[in-house]
Length: 186
Image (cartoon, rainbow, N blue to C red; front, side, top):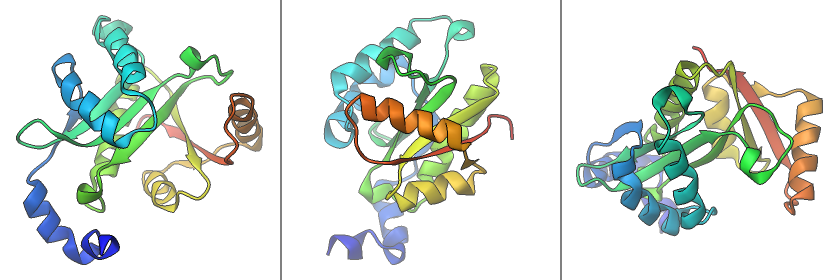
């Protein structure tokens, strides 16, 4: 039944039930909605996310590196979230900025939300002077891979892919990752 409700044919009904979504960079005032969404849908803990984002929101816009974007309904509830940042807090030896999370609630899937979230983050990364954005995606996550590829992300070099998988393996993760990258500018 779940696959039936979240299939392409149900998109008009889901779009009506969810209502219009505003895709934008998240601000400090969105923190409660983000923590609620995180506790329901993200692998990363809400407290980790709160710490990470509050640290960034406290910086002057010219000093920020990375950003978070959300898909908010008219009541301020999140239906999608994406975050781009470095891996320096985890101590991983990976340079640049990376898409750290990309999650869309089931009722808002296949409605272009993930693409719009990534476009918002690419634009902000470009504004911040980042030349490129990387992403590491579980190799069995076909939907995410298709979304990234549709936005012009390409397979990273074998060396970067190997370094990324080795860094994550050393951190305790065992699933193989596909590493993608693209310029932040359109």
